[in-house]
Length: 195
Image 1 (cartoon, rainbow, N blue to C red):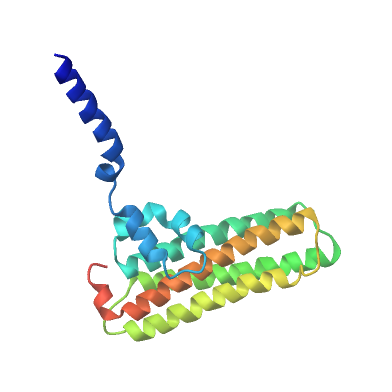
Image 2: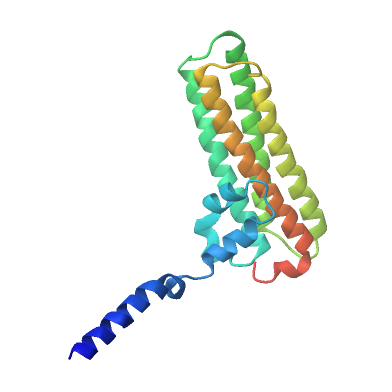
């Protein structure tokens, strides 16, 4: 009886030691592999981890996920900017910069939606043109987001610092989405199997 008890304990402890590798799947591997081309790798892995099972090794699905997440982040930032304007927290030069920033973010969101539209309708016939459009619109969105911060240069109030942090996060996520789109373009037509 004691031998059986020791054997069961040993098997249980062995199972606990090995359980993470038994229970794990390729999800973590997939997202890390997809994000390997991005500049902000940890942010990419964190923001796209939930897509691991659905995207697998598909460059088109990772690009679509990257743009979808970017749209959500950009909309959140835009809502924050509009709230700052409505609450009249910023005055003078910062208020003018805030209005410009809101306009830049609306343009960025429009470009991101165009990008997502392309990714939803990829086809072999127009692939090169679609990839060109995608790169153009994602680059334009990134420029819009960067431009948003130009008016706040040399400003250091608490609100400006918070705004800068939030907008910077969106630019990092947009940069990652652009890298994923470039990976899709480099993968070429063969990557369209299993859209």
